[in-house]
Image (cartoon, rainbow, N blue to C red; front, side, top):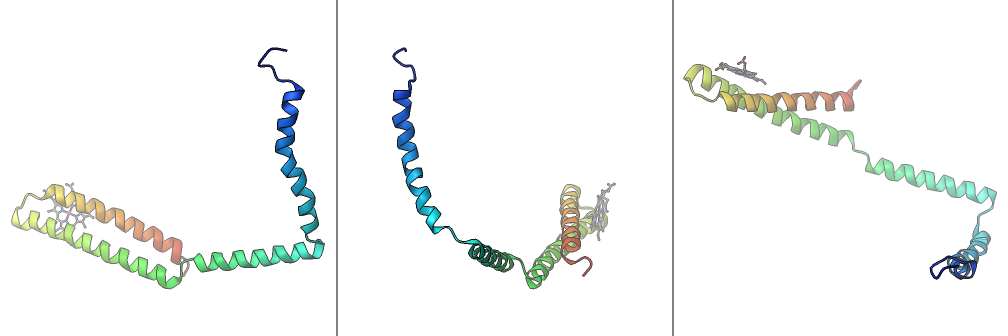
Amino acid sequence: MTHFGLSISRILPVLLAFLLPVLCALPAHAEDAPHEGESAQILQAFNKQHRETEHAKSITDKDKQRVMFLLGVSLLTLVLITGGLGIAMGLFGKSVFVAHMIFAGLSMTLAVVHAVVALVWFYPF
Ligand code: HEM
């Protein structure tokens, strides 16, 4: 055996030191363990509580409508700005083509988001 070699006499105390708390704790927990009917009850109670918290976290229809409304208002604003820039360009000869394109892109993006969110949340009503 070299100086740094691993021998049983070195590993065993370390192993025991790690295992001792586990060995002490296991029988203690075994006594606490619920009996068959009790564990089913505990599971049931846990499931019920889980469902309740999930329900509490879920977004209500009113909140969904509020989000859709805000998306719609933003979309309308962007479309009006895009239109305004288009009119400024077409009727008044202003050079705002790049701005018109940027707002057109934002409008289309928001329109797609608005449509997808509406389908996911409200189809088929
Ligand atoms: C009242 C509303 C609108 C008016 C009067 C209008 C006007 C115009 C005009 C005059 C051009 C030609 C610019 C040029 O060639 O120098 C143009 C181009 C364009 N507009 Fe609008 N626009 C309007 C709304 C929109 C909206 C809502 C979108 C998209 C969401 C849009 C997307 C585009 C695109 C992609 C082009 C480039 C087309 C091309 O050069 O081939 N526009 N628009």
